[in-house]
Each structure stands twice: as C-alpha cells, then as structure tokens.
Image 1 (cartoon, rainbow, N blue to C red):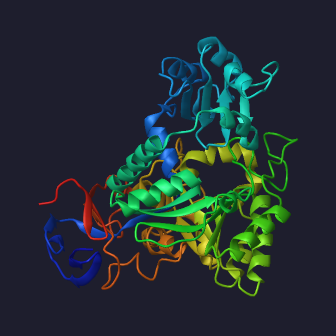
Image 2 (image 1 turned 30 degrees about the horizontal axis):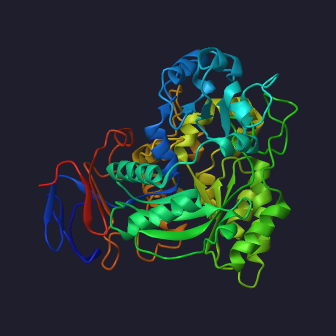
Length: 491
C-alpha cells in the first residue's frame, strides 16, 4: 500500500492517504520513498540468530560441489580457537549424493580438529582429531554424528567468548534488518545468547526485536534460572524442545520406515513422557509459549498428544502451543491441530530446498502429507512462517514466493500446487500471523493507529504484483519502533 505514516515515540499516530508512494514522518525526520509500498514489519518466527552469525563468520560450505570440494574448503580455512568450524554442506546437491566420510577429512585436514555441520544443523562431519579430543575411538567410525551424538564433540570445543557472541548477534541482526525483518523468534537460545541479546537491547544497539525461545530439552532454562520477561526489543517468550531430528539426515520420526532406508523410522529425541514433563514445568513457571520441533508425521502426532494434555490443564487454555516445522502431518492430525488451537510454524523455503529429497525419503504414497499449507489453513489451523535461517536464507520475499509458487529447485513448475496459498495469506503468515504465534498481535503486525511503528518499505506491492515478480522485489528501508534501521534510497 501507499501511505503517509506519522510516528511518535515508536508508535503509529496517523495513517494518511498518499498517491505517490510512502512517506514516514517521525518527530525529527521525514523519509520519502516515491513509488514504493509500505508493509507491516516482516517477521521471521523461527530462526537462529547465533547460527546466522556463525554461518556468516565461519567456513561456509553451502556452495561445495562434492565431498572432496567441501574438505578442500575446510583444509584452506584458518582455525578459530584451534578448530576449523564449517556449516552448510548438503550432500543431496552433490554430483554424487552420498554422505561424506571421515577419510577425506583425515587426508586433507590431519593436524587440526574439524567440525562441519550439515545445512540442517542435525548432522556433523568430523575428522579423527576431533573424535579423539571427544574421547571417541575413530577406528571404524564414519565421522558422521547425528543429533544427540554430536554433543560429546560440542562439549570439548572451546566456548565462544561474550564478545564473539555479541559480534555474531549484531551481524545477524543487521543482516535481518537489510532483509526488511523487524522481529525474529530466536529458537533454542542458550543462557549466554539470551543474556547478551538483552544487554544489546537495553543499550539500544539491537536493530530488530527478538523473542527468545530458550533451550529446554533437558530443563536447561530451569537450571540456569531463566524465566519469562518482557521488554520492547527483547522478550523471553517461550521454551523450545525437540521431538525428532531432520529429514535430510533421516532423523525425522516417521510412523513407517523411510522409503530409502527400510530399517529406519528416525529418532525419538524426546519421548512423550519427557515432553509432557518439560511442558508442565514450563507452564508451572509461567512461560506463555512452548515450541516443539517436529518434522516427521509420528513426531507431530506425539507432540499433539502432549499438547492435548496441556490444553486440559486448568491453566492451559491460553498457552501458545507451537509445532515448529510441522513438515509431514497426517490428515487426522491436521484436524487435531485445529481443534487444540496448535500453531503450525512452517518454513516455506524448506519445501523449495527439500522436495526432491523428500520424494526419496517418503515415497509417493506419503507425499500428500508433506509441506501442507493450504490444507492446514482450510482446516482452521493458525499458520505462521519463518525461514529457519541459517539453514535457509533469511529472505522473507523468498518465503512468500515459496508459499505462492511452490517451485522447488530443479523443477519447472509447482510441486503439489493444491498446497499453494495466496499472496495475502503468505504476507499474513509473515506479519500478523507471526506476531500472534508469540502473543504480540495486539500491538504489531498491522499498519494502524496505536500499533508499533515496525515497517518495511519495498519497491512494489507484493499483494498485487504478479507472483513471478515477488523474488525480484527490493527492500528499500526497515523501520523498527519508528527508527530507520536500514535504508538504501531514503531522501
């Protein structure tokens, strides 16, 4: 939309018609964007701020073309605190799409420990040096660690200093602002990251709002004394758990074996009993939201079983219950999610990256359960959206494009196009719908008097432009709390 927006003390005080573009008037400045539209500030409701900072600062393997090419990149990279740390390899995109092995790392990187995570973050590729430091005998070991098996190596890696964590958070936050993002729901947050995010927010250095969902798989938030707390730019919003792993590393929990691995149904990272115990503890402590990672259909069903018991508590009716990813949902569980008011927090660009791999993992009969968007909306499920960066690019425009066109990499047309959603629905999922998944829709997500002046300026109206033109749109400026945090062409 075109509009003239008046801002006072970080909130919208007037919205006036404008025929020529967008004008933002604050107490001290006027910003004019001829021919440009204004959107409610874009939100990423599932992402990893520290992970993005690490990804941008450490060794990037997302462009590697083979196992050896990835190992060569690692071999010429400078160690950080004595380790070579990389992220982003994806064997599904290599000419020979097989998982990498320890042998090539030992050949090319024999004298320094190497730790390189797959693009989904649920599998690590390490050399013998790293295994020995973790007390693991490398003899006969593949050099691949999946989910919980990664922890012994993580335990012996040097911890980041507060200054490094601060650098990562600011780098990621400024990157988000350049993408038009005004708020991020930060997932699986450690005590150190939460503390430093709060310090940056209180000192006025944080350009985006952050809702922290703290680490709770083993009650970490309780052990570290973390509790829900409010703030304008940083809020301790919820607790994060993991029900299963990822589809790419065959850790997503399925109700029947993988089509390309007959003896494997995935991983149970947290049992129903353990999830219920952790959720009850979180509700007892006053946390307003719970977010549980569930990708496979059986994991989703298990989480719904837990959430049904939380809803039945005397104080469970208003808790925000989120399923993160909800990538593969059986038809009967779609209905259960709607009845229990469970939020599906989806990442549409995962579909674009993973469709070819999903076909191999799931087989034709189960694909109808995959990356269900319109089905969830039609059933009355609240769908909110994010990117899961750094697993995917932080671009919300890429997410909107994925929602409405649904064309995976390597394909010429939409994949299961009955699950495409409209441009208006897609934008809602990244604005008001995303805010509602953290209980903030009462003051953010709309361009209206009294709402927070979180605004994204873009060079076209993504609600009305041709679907094919969404990806070529440009973010011109980002305002959070009425302050211009990023600008390309403001006058």
